[in-house]
Image (cartoon, rainbow, N blue to C red; front, side, top):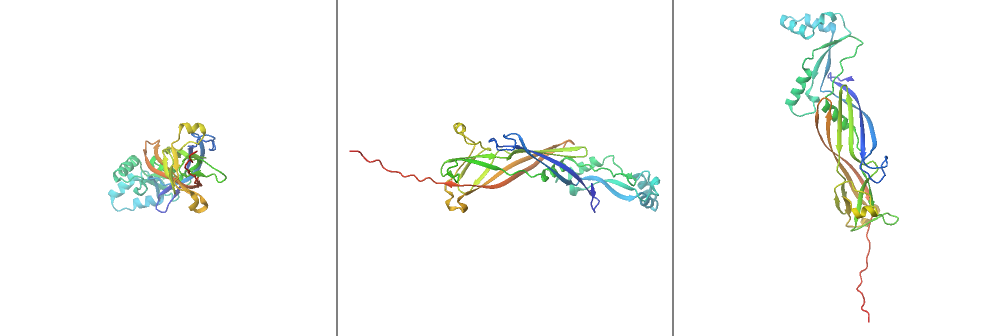
Length: 304
């Protein structure tokens, strides 16, 4: 925990993420789709909405209260800093006051912040911390924790395989159904977890398929695809590109294909918080050589 110049604090939190592969071709690190194929562990700094803010030392607080000329104010401050007299000679320990700041609230509704802050502050009073003892630990609410954890994670970009692959260039063919499928550690789901104090937040992000944008061609894709095999060919696939032009006019004689995946993220937390974190899109570019087969049509000759 560290304290900023404005009295706010930040908390270092460990975040872990696990990714479930969409690949069904055995190319993932686990060897099969639907398994946990990769993980991440990162540290992130989280700024709590509410915390205990350091105030004056025991000696300075006592002096402030006793030098007040208004008896009513003196009485009120004495109740707020209950027991201040016993720390009147302590210049090394400090009082800490519970406080909240709207600037660090994740929501946009002032009414929601007011409710949140009132609930957190309810029953809390300033506490005195002698020198050498730890200040009160700030509490990170579930939504703040979830958003910080989600922002800290990097989802692996998608990689793809394709078929047909003709000749040394492994080219597909103009006008044919080119099967596309997710390979490697392309995630279909991400699970992100972080814990701060007594609060644990879990973010689950899922995707339904590949978003493909070839330079020349039409896309028919509603999933992550399956690898082409003779057996799979009888069943069909949910992801193909039909290229309408060869790659000959493009740089390197390959056709760029933008590959994206949209992940919808939601969270739950042990403090009861739940919510939706929006959509995150990963983007990558791959290239596929596309060839054109020349066919000669002739009219049959009549036999005498």
